[in-house]
Length: 164
Image 1 (cartoon, helix red, strand yellow):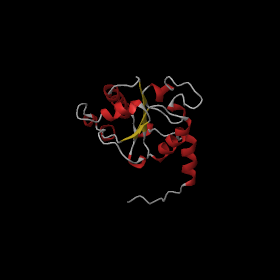
Image 2 (image 1 turned 180 degrees about the horizontal axis):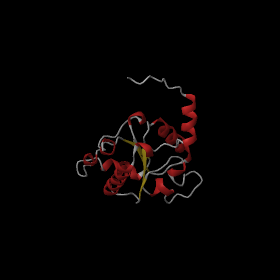
Image 3 (image 1 turned 45 degrees about the vertical axis):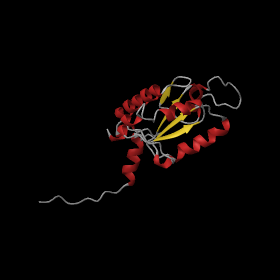
Image 4 (image 1 turned 90 degrees about the vertical axis):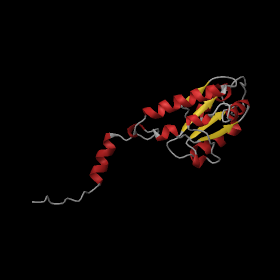
């Protein structure tokens, strides 16, 4: 409950969609009711990256670096057509979707999407977080049964006699 109700977003606004993302934090739209009101200035303080706008190839390395600096568990929202599929820019310098460099949890459609679209995406992400358990953490490393057996063989457990 706490994790989904207190998302700490990191803004990565690159173009027009960033204006709508910033507008969503104003009093008119009240993003605070979703628990994601304060955008964090550092990736080490954030657990949600909102990528909005055109992602160029030069910017892709920066996005990867920022993503790697965020602590686990972390989530990503792709906001708008440009960050999701490249938008109208089908050129050599524009990445055709941020999902080619970081895993995206929620896509928000539109050019640019309205703040209500961002709120709907946040609610979908909160539903996704609510379905997660400790066994289904969003890591890429999965513990296999043979790994557990190898671990048990390598660990010596102190045997204490049973009380009489």
